[in-house]
Image 1 (cartoon, rainbow, N blue to C red):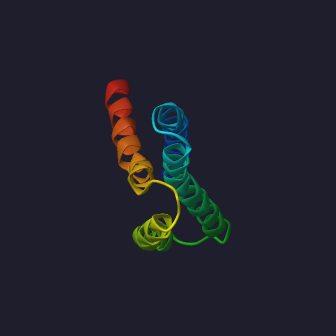
Image 2: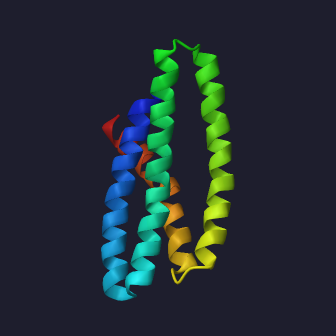
Length: 122
């Protein structure tokens, strides 16, 4: 039942990475890179926000922990399909696909950062 805390931390980390990365890319490469990076990062923020809404809904409905865990896994698997579809859509825009992919990779970076912070606190 620690998922809400994890999702909120991930959203905060990803938001910070999004702002810093978009600022750097805007100054270095231009708007097409900065917006693509930001959209890649926002994908995960919106996804975690959706999962938080669903998690809270399942808790209000007094669903079992196993049910919630299985549903979170299904949503996580569906995220990969949505990521692929969004990448295909970005290809047909003036946005830079590599910057978008970099924005999508902020989730693993934020997860590793969160783990490091947890290890340091211990």
